[in-house]
Amino acid sequence: MKKSKSIFLFFLLLLTVSQLYAKLAAIWLKQLIALSDVIVVAEVQSVSRPLIGKRYARARVIQVLKGKESGVIKFLASARGIEDVSDAKKGEIDLLFLTRMPESQSYTVTFAGRGRMPLRVVAGKAYLTLWPDVHLPEGTPTIEGPDPQWRFIRSVEMATIRELVEKTMHEAN
Image (cartoon, rainbow, N blue to C red; front, side, top):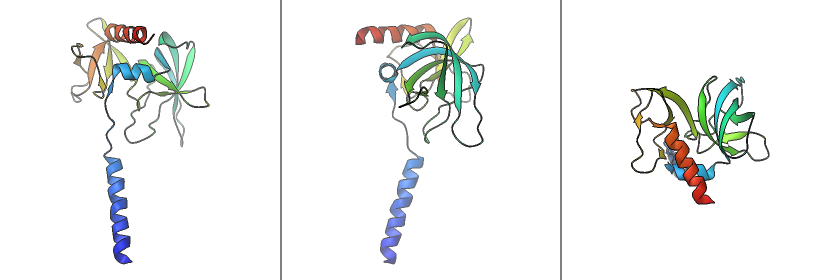
């Protein structure tokens, strides 16, 4: 009995540790576009700060690349698991790839938060910052991300992403 209990605890520990080191698979931009119900450029107006529970962001839609949203949208700005990087910062302008939450008026950021791409201006051009888990077509030019400490994070011109979204949407129709 003691041996079977030890084996059970060992496998339980192994399962727990493997979940801690779970790595999200990569996704191609084309897949991210297909999975998203809505793709918008939006300015985050507010982020809820509950003591317990999920945080939600409200963002004013500036431009729609996919879908029919306008006005203000609401999206989950909290991680739903270890690999999830969903977040929002008040005042930030983002390109958001969003998926509607079941039975809700809210959205989640597609692909565990990788569908949130903060906008920044470099040498007068708009750039979007993205995680390395989001793969761009080969040859797509990128620059270093905003923080040299995180060299794996890259930025790509907003105009390039807009063209890729439009091309993908056209090919899908």
